Image (cartoon, rainbow, N blue to C red; front, side):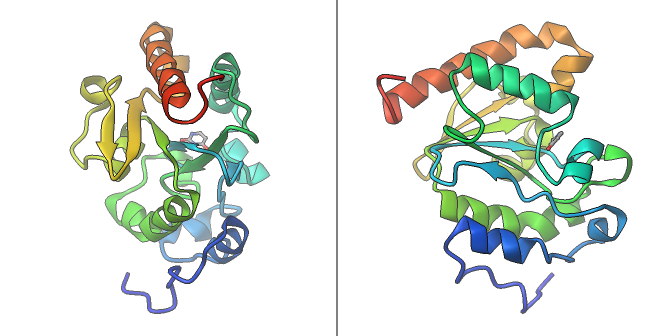
Length: 199
Ligand code: URA
């Protein structure tokens, strides 16, 4: 993907980046979906949540985490006192829906990586929550395992990163909710420490 036309380095705000990324055609996913799901939230937010990739509902509506998993994520955010458009920015490892919601391939992730990197360069989060193994592997550790790595902070270039379960995993296995809530409580504590002691 040495695509010379795909230079995002001169783009310095989220609106301009979104416009550009909406034209992305760097892997096979775009041809099989309805559109690019760039992400949403407060571009000035200090907390970024990263999922895997859009599902059917997200693809249809062009917004991240708006299906069943997204509704559960909204409940978790609410319990944390985080507003989707106020305290956080929500995005995905890949911006286009993989067919049948399969895990995006190595190639697809690599093709979308400059989009994710440009988002993070502009957003400059203090805290990142990685929802599930795909995000963990894309952002932190290509050999990461969520059951092993969740619940523990990793600090990388001044960003505090917390891997936790994907909300879709909680829907399949409600026993994971308790651990996930512990992880989000750590996120709220870190938010108080780094961003707003009064939260
Ligand atoms: N699952 C994800 O990983 N991302 C979404 O946007 C929706 C469901």
